[in-house]
Length: 375
Image 1 (cartoon, helix red, strand yellow):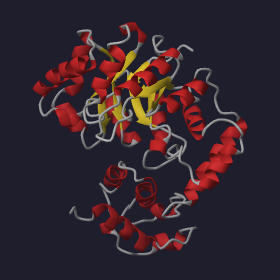
Image 2 (cartoon, one colour):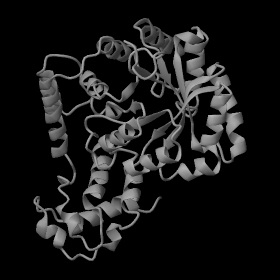
Image 3 (cartoon, helix red, strand yellow):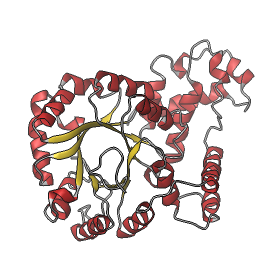
Image 4 (cartoon, helix red, strand yellow):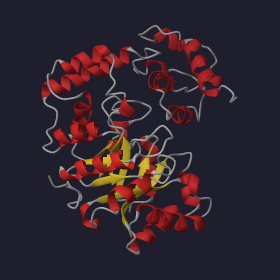
């Protein structure tokens, strides 16, 4: 199936090279990677995604040894990223880029993304003219499409795309569990991308394995469909959105490649029964939250200090339930203007909460979790 945004891309399922198989010494097992790449290509797919820091800088080398040395350049689409920790000044960027080309064994990247953009690192990229440098490299033929990967609020995403309308594609975290999340904001970010008419690349469609390793009650809901694997429902959910150009899966075994490509070769969106099952799984997870907040936002309407109570509760739940490394960043965003420390304990929130939560106590519990001193 031809990709509606970029005809050179086959289908909309990509190989994420962040979780390749490694041995007991954390070295990538090249023989297994070759088998995985071979099967993926054999089944008609061709999009690979890597970054300089993946697998302790081994991912790019694995791409070279298992892909670019073994296949002609027109057999694959290769995406790489500019990660902020690897450059301090504008002068550092081009040498790093050339190092990445060499590590991957190619003369150009099809997509080159400003990596993990957020309010915490965006200014660094601007100060170092990272975007401008990437657009210059595109003019030189060393990059075909400049994009970003993104971890922050929809508001921040809108700002970046307004600053740089030339951006050609955007990679966001998107899955059925994060769809309405006030922290990850998958749907809100997706809506921003529709507004700017940007093709969407999806990372974490199975939320780092969470939507594969389901609680027993949730797994039974999907097993009762008598269809595919838990991963298949998660990936098909994402791929069914019209603006999605690519869904990445960080595959670590031949079995994962076999399963994922089997249902994505002839992709079919979720039917009504499957979508209802997914909704049940989401409800089960919501019932597992450490703080059973339903985000009705009654508490925020009358808070004299403007504390974003449901949002900081969501960040807390993400950290406790999923060990989400993004949770702390979202907490900082949500408390930028008013934090739990500003609470005057007036009690209006507790008086109106339909769930009868002890909000005053809980927001201090959240504060202790995210603001505890480093050891």
